Each structure stands twice: as C-alpha cells, then as structure tokens.
Amino acid sequence: MSSYILRRMVLLIPVLIGVAIIVFSMVRLLPGDPAVAMAGVHATPEYIAQVRANLGLDEPIHVQFGVFIRRLIRGDLGISTRTNRPAVVEIWPRFLNTLSLTFISLIIASFFGILVGVISATRPYSLLDNVTMVFSLFGVAAPVFWLGLILMLIFSVRLGWLPSSGMGTPQHFVLPAVTLAAHSTALIARMTRSSMLEVLNMDYIVTARSKGLMERVVVVKHALRNALIPIVTILGLRFGMLLGGAVLTETVFSWPGVGRLMVDSILARDYPVVQGSVLLLALLFVLINLFVDILYAFLDPQIQYG
Amino acid sequence: MHFFRSKAFRQLKKNRLAIAGIIFILALFVVAALAPYIAPYNPYQTDFFRTLEGPSSQHLLGTDDLGRDVLSRIIHGARISITIGFISVAIGLAVGVPIGAISGYYGGKIDILVQRLVDIMMAFPGMLLAIIIVSVMGVGLVNAMIAVGIVSIPTYIRLVRGSVLSIKNNEFVEAAKALGVRESKIIFKHVLPHCLAPIIVQSSLQVGAAILWAAGLGFLGLGAQAPIPEWGAMLSQGRGYIRTAHHVTTYPGLAIMLTVLGFNLFGDGLRDALDPKMSRD
Image 1 (cartoon, each protein chain N blue to C red):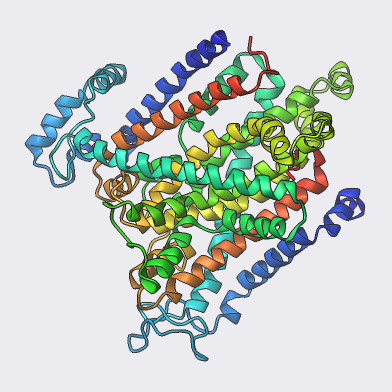
Image 2 (image 1 turned 180 degrees about the horizontal axis):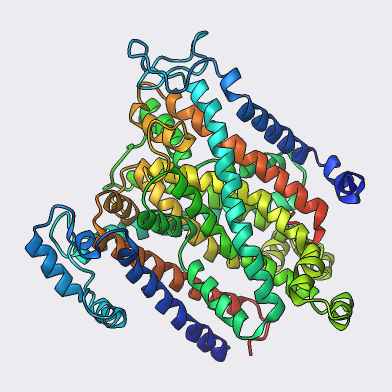
C-alpha cells in the first residue's frame, strides 16, 4: 500500500516537470517577441528591454527554464501587465473563489448523483428510473453556460428568488453551484445506477437478504459500499470537468474566479496572469487525481498494488 | 455492405434511443447541406428596425440584437457545428490512433515515453488545455477546432494502446510475423482492424463532446468571432439581453443540446451493439 502511494508520487515528478515546461513554453511559442508579450503591447521600449533582461531571453533556453523554475519555487509568477501588480496577488484570491465553487458543486453532484442512482437501481424501469434516465441524458448534453442562463432566467429574472450574478451571500452560491454540478450529477447518477445494478445481483446480497436483514441495510451497507469503488474513480475525472466548466459558469454568473480571470487575461494579452492561472489549475487537478488514486487503493481491498 | 447484415446492426436497430439519435443526426445533415435553400433569411442580413423581436410568423424564432433572423442563423450554424465535430475528431484519430498503436505494439521505451506525454496532457482538464492552445495559437474558429482536436488525442492514444495490447499476442499476429510480414503492415492491416469497435464508439461520442467544447470556446469569446453564426458565439452575444429577449440565447442553446444528445444516443447505442463489454448500463 505505502509502496503504491510512493510509486504514484514518483510518477508525479515527470508530470509536474511537463506541466512546468508547457507553462514555460506558452509565452515563447507566441508569434512575435516574448518580451513584448510579457511586458504588454503598450509597454515602453525601456520596460520591454527590462523584461527581456529579467526573463533572460538572450540566454540559452535551458538557462531561461532554470530561472523560471527558481522563480516559481519562490512563488514569483511575474507582474500583471494590466494592473502592474504581482500576478500571484491577482490570481490567489480568485483561485480560492473557484475552489469554493468547484468543491460545493462536487459535493452537490456526489450527493444527489449517488442518491438518485441508488434509488433508480433499487426500482429499475420504474417511472422514477425513467425520469432520471431522461434527465441525465439531457443533463450530459446541455451546455453548462446555456443551462446557467436558463436557470438565471427562471430563478432570478422571472421569480426573483436568487441573485443573478456576483458573490457575497450564501444565496449567491446556489445558481452557479447547481449549474456547474448538473453535468456531473447526471453522469454520477448513471454510473451509480449501473454499478449498483451489477452489485445487487451478487450472491452475497442474496445471502444478506435471506438472513432477514432490512432492505435498507442491504442496499446501503452491503451494496453501496461495493458499488462506490468505480464511482470514486470517476470523481477525479469529474473534478477536471468541473474545473473546465467553472470557467464557463464564472462567465455566466460574473463569479470572480480564476477561470474568468484567465480568459480575460488571454483577451487582454496579460500573459503572466494566464501562465499563473494555468499552472495553479493544473497543479490542483494533478493533486486531486493523486488523492483519488490513493482513496481508490484504500477502498478496494481486492487489488494489490505492488 | 457487410455491416448492414451484421448482428451489431440488428442490435442497433432494436435500440429506439439510438434510432432517435440517428434520425436527428441525419436531419441535421440535411439541414446543414440545404442551409442556403431552407433558411428563410440571409443569416448575416441585419435589420435595425426589427431588433430583438420575439418569435412571430415572419421570424419564427425572433431576431437578434442586430435584427438578424435567429432561425436562419441556427440553420447556417448547423454547418459550422458539424464541421467542428468532424474536423476535430479527424485530428484526434489521425494523430491518436497511429501513436496509440505504435505505443501498444512495440512497448518498451517508446511506450513509456508516450505514456508520460499522455500523463502530462491529461494533467490539464480538457477545457483548460483547449484554452491554453487557443491562447498560444490565437483566437478564432479554426484554431478552436484544432484545439478541441488536440485535446482528444490522449483519449485515443489510451484507447487504441489498450486494444492493441489485448490483441497483439494473438496467434494470427504471431503467424503474420513468422511469415515475415512488415511490421507496419501487421499493425495497420492485422491488428488495428480488430480495434475498430471501441474507436468508432469513442468517435461518435467525441463528435458531441467536440461540438460542446467548441461552443464553450465560442461562448468565452475564444472561438468563432462575430458575425459567424456559431451557436456558442450566438449565445454569448445574446446573453446581455436575457432579461428582455431570452429567445436569442434559448434557441441556439437548444440546438447545441439536441445535437450533442443525438450523437451521444447514437454513440451509446453503437457501444451496446458493437461492444457489450463496454456497456455502462
């Protein structure tokens, strides 16, 4: 077990180096002069020269990469060309906003997805099961930004129940979090249903029933625990989808998150902020996947990791 | 054709949801092909006296902020969405299938290298990777298509590698080797045809996913630019008027959802018919 975790962490090293190389190359692959890209199009020639010296753009590429990594370790992501403040200062508070939105969505999606999936599996082909099936098909196909606009139209424009944009109160979380969670809820519900159906046919479930256990105990304690294993593996992937969806959801609801910041920075050619946002989001995703893999190893006693 | 008499096709015909998906996809193709003839108006024709009008007998789905007919724009948008879906899948297939096949067939150092590269690409959530690529290549419809195609490459590599691994130790591959058949011929003529089922299923689902992602890029302002009638970009232009004229956003979104649903239903049906082991429900 511990050797599995260790091996999994060693495999992380090339991935992290790869992520750093991609973020490092982003600016250097841009058409034109990377110093101009980093300094901003309206920068003075003196400032551009300063940025060039600062990035070491006249040095060989591996020296530049060394400088880049050393700065990263110190938490230095460069200076935003739009605000002239350190990129970290711009990114960090917005990163936390994205994090809270994503985690709340993940909790909503896991809770309702598993709940609905279990109920559907215990009554297959019932009305509820069919309704769930239809909703999950549409939930997977609906673009998240469109769903957000429709929910906004119904619950804030027409009914006036919830705020349509910004953040501050708990009510502000409802629409963005539900919007973001919809797609994942649908997939988790489908996954839970099929996984539960498979487990419910196992011999040990028949045994549990025949020894007179309450149906609820059979379903929750015996079936769900085993059905959870494949569900947990997709949660890691879901998290990546949620981070991607967060970019769109933040745009719909004017949520001050890092996704929206990143898109605005791309359109304004503020590359230090783009690089920093990409790096933080990728890092988060990699760590979540590591956590899910370890959780998976804990949950599944059948598999030996050598 | 051989396929139409196969067991898989009979299986597919029995799946009503998959049939519904196929019918919708075919209808979409017809609409896209005949767009200039069936669209009631020119999708670029502005009319500043009739902006943001609700649905009426003259404009069935209303007009947008520049007075353009929403229905005509959606009809022409079908061409763009279909192109996006197929071009990006073609990119994913053209790059992912050969790399996955070589990685799985030869194994060893090449395989390890490819797998680490795939790990790195997969360290980015798909949408984020697409955004990164667009930010380097520049904003626009063509670059968005390419970006979405590149994002699908690692999925194809993993899929094909796995299938090749399970096939390459079969006796007929050994026999071909013993007969001295060239390795490239073994891979493409003998091994890959046995991996077709999962590749076809994945591609059908990938068309839907690509349309959804490209629409997302369009919505963010990183994909198709005005005045192109791409559905995601239309939604983005209309969302400022959600309080007064929601039809400008509602209908393009509906078009995206139904199209993606069509390809998903078809893909799910294909998976159940071709590859019962992969079936999820």
